[in-house]
Amino acid sequence: MTLDLRLLRSAVELEAWAEALERALVLWQVSRHPELVPVILHASTEALRTFAEPRARTRHDFDAAWRRLALDDAGSVATGWLANHLSTKVPEVDPPGGNYTERGFARTRHAALLLRLATLTARTPDPRVARAGLALLERGRLGAWDEDQTRDLYRPVLQMIERAGDPTIGPSLERIARQPPSRRASARTVLRADLPSSIARLSKVAPHGTLDPEGLEAVAPQPRRQTTSGGDIAGLLAQVWANPWDASLREVLGDAWLDQGGPQAELLLLERAGAATDDKRMVRIIRKHAAALMGADLASVLLKPKFRGGLLDAATVRATQAASSEVWQRAPGAEELSTLRVLRQGRASGVRYATLALSSRARSLEQVDVDRSEFLIALSEGPRRPLKGLRFLDMPSYEDILLVLASASLDEVTAIDVPCLHGSWLHMFRRTEWRDRLESLAVAPSLDWLGHTGDPLFHQVGALIRWFPNLRRLAVHDEYNVSPILQREADGW
Image (cartoon, rainbow, N blue to C red; front, side, top):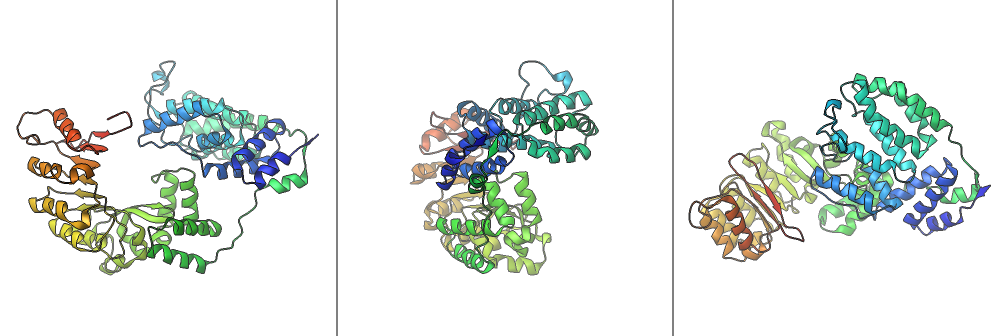
């Protein structure tokens, strides 16, 4: 029996990737042809570029969004996103349906991961799900105190892989069985004992029917052609540095990087797949290729860099002794600073930080730290920047507050973070245009906020919410350096 690939071929030619993915998966269900796996993976990658993925800040919010998407969306594109994020931001939760304390699972991330595994296993068999399980095995992070506990963790992973029925991952499983990547002795023992039976069952999966060779060639993913030269990319990069706010230029540069390959392309692929900026894979790439991504000088003076679209987006300044004086002198002239939006002082001296933050190259800065009045004055008198947030590292003076209120260079600031703020100064914000402008405020509680003493904290917070009607985020510092964060949602705080 020859399988009909005409509908799949039509969807691929029209670049209707969601439809192409559905057609390829239907063919996979009835045939289990290994030749369809690259088609499914390619169509899934392209369809996810336009997928409205859920956003969440905390692990628990992300886990709730993951499970909600799994329940609400049975589509094949959603399955790809769920598989890609199977082990992303797994929270610590109590295991449902029983007390596993004596099994070592209570209040651990294993319980939440087991729930995700069960959810993903219940969906339609899919080679992408098999690869999500394979990624878990390759990371070697699963494990418990003894073999029984470890087997309880690995059994659902192996069941998920077997149900997907993708024999193309057999060689990878054999490699893991020979050399388990886990550091735990219990995990190595379990993998060596249990993987061979899973490999044997997968090897029995045989394709049904035949695929039309001409049709298969038409739907097979085509390798990217290397059409962009290094000179072209250098020219595009110079244009982006000159116009860092031009989104269309950034998009063209991103496509050029993807054509050429390299660390920027790796970061772009992870970013477009929904990886967070602190994703371990992104951090690993940045550490390995820091000099290529942002230049040797900035790699020496900046800590914890984050990238957006392959370009430097946020960083913290290192301590003075991290680099020589010659490097510190050259760093402010680096073109890579042109796309930097967030710069934190960290352990750097005020002078070193100001040298970078006030550089003429750093024209895109939106979030800065203020540790002294001189820096704030220089910031207000220097070239105009799209500043959105000021974080004071020390209690601002009366003159600092007046400068923030009156400076035309700071008229786009909507977020203020201060370790302490006098009540009368807060009233000054309230009586100016800042009343309607302020969207984010981080402040320490003060007994004179309301003009008298003895008010509990929740009264002060309530007053802030009333005073600033457009406030969207409120963080309250206390003497224990704990910052409860209130976030305004559609249905209230």
